[in-house]
Image (cartoon, rainbow, N blue to C red):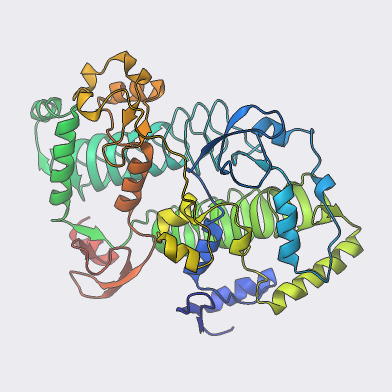
Length: 556
C-alpha cells in the first residue's frame, strides 16, 4: 500500500496530504493523484453550479418567457424544459471529429458553446410536478424556488438540501420532516421553527442540538423533554401562556432570536454535527459510513471530499445528487450510474468522462446533451475500436498536462464565480476571483425600489396580515431587494403562527449559510479534556466546543 504523501497545490501553493486509501481509489479509477488541493478542486466544480442566481429570458426555440440559470448575456443557446427534452433538435448535429493537433479542452469548449442548454437543471428521470424555479432537483410536487432537493418533497419553498419533506419553508439540509421553518440540519421532525441539529422533535421553536423534544422553546442540548422554556420545565398551562405572547409576532420573535443566541453560548457544542454515522469526518453527515472530509451527506458510503450528496457509494470529489451511483470522481450532479469521471449533470450513464448533460448513455467522452448513445466523442459516434483509440489519444494528452482526473478547467465554466455555490461556501472578492482565473458577474438580476409596502407598514402579527399581502411588493430590510409573499407561503405562516419575514430569500439563505458555519475544519482543542479535535468552529470563535467523548459524557 502506498504511504501518505504531502503535495503542494499547483494553484494556490498550499500543502495537502493524500492518504493511502486515496491512492487506492485513484488507481481504481485509472488516474494519478490530483495536483490540486481539496479547496481548489471544490472551487473548480462549484463554479459550474448556479443554484439560485436566476434570470428572465426567452427560450431560444419556442420563444416563450422562461426563468434560467444562464445570464441573458451568456453566449449559450438556452431552451426551456419542454424544448430541451423534446425531439425538436439533435445533439449529434453539433458534433465534429476530434483533431489530435488541437488541445482537447479547446475543442470541448467549442462544442459546449454551441449545444443548447436546459434553462434549469431539472431531471427527467424523476420529473417534478408543478414546481417552478426548481433547480438541481427532481421528483417533487408543488414546490417553489428550491435547490438540490428531492425526491418526494411536496409544498416546499425557499429551501435547499431536502429529501422526503412536506410543507417546509426556508430550510437547509433537512429530511423526512413536515411543517418546518428556518431549520438547519433537521431530521424526522414536525412543526419545528428555527431548529438546528434537531432530531425527532415536535411543536418546538429555537432549538439547538436537541432530540426527542415536544413543545419546547429556546432549548439547547436537551433530550426527551416536554414543555421546556429556555431549558427550564414548565407546566403545560404555563408554557402555552408564554407561547401565546410570542407566537406570530415579528418583534417578539426577533427579540427572542437574539436572546436565544446569547443563551446558547453558555452551552458546549459538539465538535461536529454528524448523526447516526460511523467512521466519518466532516460536518452534517447523516446516516452514512466511511465518509471523510465531506459536508452535508445523507445515506452515503465510502464517499470523500464531497458536498451536498445523497445515496452515493464509492466516490471522491463530488457535488450534489449522487442518488444510486458508485465509482464517481470529480463530478457535479450525477445520478443513477457508475464509473463517471469529470462530468456535469449526467444521469443513467456508465463509463462516461468529461461530459455535460448526457443521459441514458455509455462509453462517452467529451460530449454535451447526448441521450441514448454509445461510443461517442465530441458528439460524434464511432465504432468501439475507433472510440477506444481516440480516447487513448485524449487521455494521453490530459495525463501529460496533469489534467486527467481533474474537473473541467475554469475557462469552460458556464457561470461567474459569484453566481454559484462557490461564493456561498468559499467567498472571495471580485479581485480575488479574477486573480484565480474565475469570471465575475457585475450585473446580477435583482429589482430594487419597486416596493408597494414598506417594512414598517407590515403588521407585526400574522393574525393582522390581510389576504392582499400576496399582491404587495416588499423590500428587504437588509439589502433593499424587492420580494413577494406567495399564496402557499402565507398559508404556511398562518398555520404555523409565524410572522412574515422582513428579508428577501437571498438574505435569508445567506443567514442560514452563516448559521450553518464554514465548509472547513479547523484544528482546535476540546474545551474540557484539552485533546486535539477538528471542527468547523474556528479557534477564535466564542463557542464552547467539546470532543465527541466529552459531549456524550457531560451532555447526553
